[in-house]
Length: 251
Figure 1: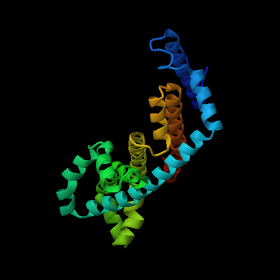
Figure 2: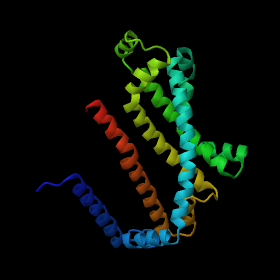
Figure 3: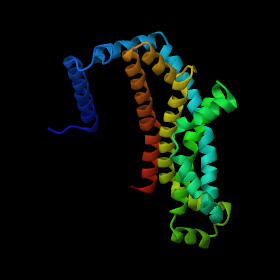
């Protein structure tokens, strides 16, 4: 009996639910620490019915779109500049790699001191947690464009900005999209770090409220919401872009 992709995913999801229910029944943890799938589902329904989850999603998405958009613009520009200027690349490479390994949560104390308890502090944390990932991805993609491709472009008359528009940027698109996906995941982690550590509304605050009230059903429900948002963007945004690129490249 053959199963298509959707059937396999549904079966795996049902298997995870069964494991969850089994662990719940074994009472390894108290019920208030490890709620059942039904309790978490009821919390999800109540959260959306009261619009509490909808408000949290809207606030978090507003922040991540703003922070990620700025990071994408600056990171792409920096990546191209560093890849183009050799002395700048050699001078900044260890510094950029070092900063990239710094967890985004480390920027929060500086953000709070510089900007205070406001939206700007959270946006700053998102930018600092994302921009270097995109910069490194773009720089690597540009550096990996084969010299033969560049020579062909120059022979056909592409020079200066036209070389980037007609040769380099199309050549790096697959790697660029992968870098954007990585940056998006870093942006979410940075956003949750910022929202969880001080009152700011959003999904991160809902997580912390659940923890402080010992309401693990709410904690798990918010985690599921975050996962679902990630899956939706992966399938319908980045997934469509990647599928379009594969068709264009004939792979």
